[in-house]
Length: 342
Ligand SMILES: [Ca+2]
Ligand SMILES: [Ca+2]
Image (cartoon, rainbow, N blue to C red; front, side, top):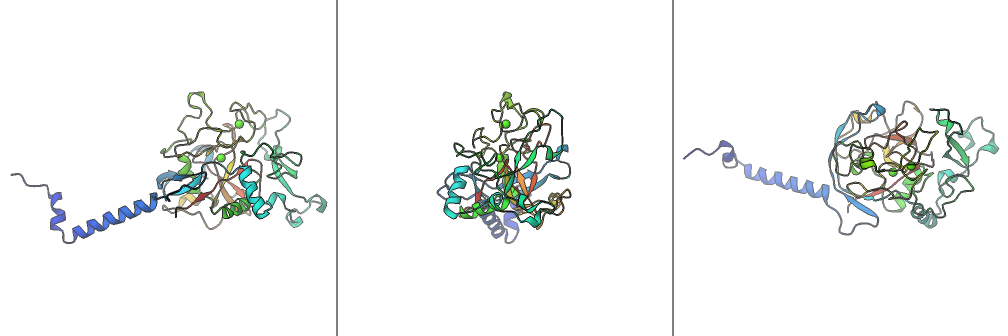
């Protein structure tokens, strides 16, 4: 009779191995349950994102120095809004609380030195395409501060959200998004949670749906086609924001994780964070750092928007990241919320 392999004997010959094995199984099972458990009843409009481990970030040359290195991150399970927060959802919050967004508030003249006090009035940034065909990379050539632009008047004071109930709410500063999330009993996603969810269970893909931008010639997200900012070919059917859920969901049932409007995350934005961020459930750095705007307090934005084109921005790629000052708003920035399992 042949000898049994040595490895099959270790539970017998190593003292205490049975206890050790049981302990390891217990830890493994409880960790698995903690990462994947979900409450019985799904919160309205939310989908369950099972926890897991993934490769976060991007080493694409377009994002050099801001989304690298690609690194391993583990997140725990959570609920996430299937869509960006809509105008009708935000309206419920405002009706219940009387909340006034930052874009609607009278700015402090001290923050606008050199501007006559009579000209310091509530405003927000509205994308206004150049009227000439001259190519430009100066953002002041297309971003205009518009008095009276806010979430109820997305294009300026004479516009409205009538008929746009299912559009993503825009002109939302980070502080506004945070206030909504608290009221809703939710929170903003961490950057790691957001990117894990956006990847939809796929590994190492360029886009939330795969590696090909238009598989079978089909637009998978609301982005910009043509030479930004002069030429908007609207091949995807939408000049600006689209009603939420107008494009296919990702593998977790989440809509518009690429394009439509940018989405705020809870993390402070630091260009160097990925070099030393923790692997387990990272919550972001303690402060922000963008060398281009060193004095600005900035939070992470993810997903790109209807203004991201293949010749500019390109941050509809899932590993890309961007940032915004916490009191700044624009007509291509919104958000969605997450909620912990109980
Ligand atoms: Ca579009
Ligand atoms: Ca989006």
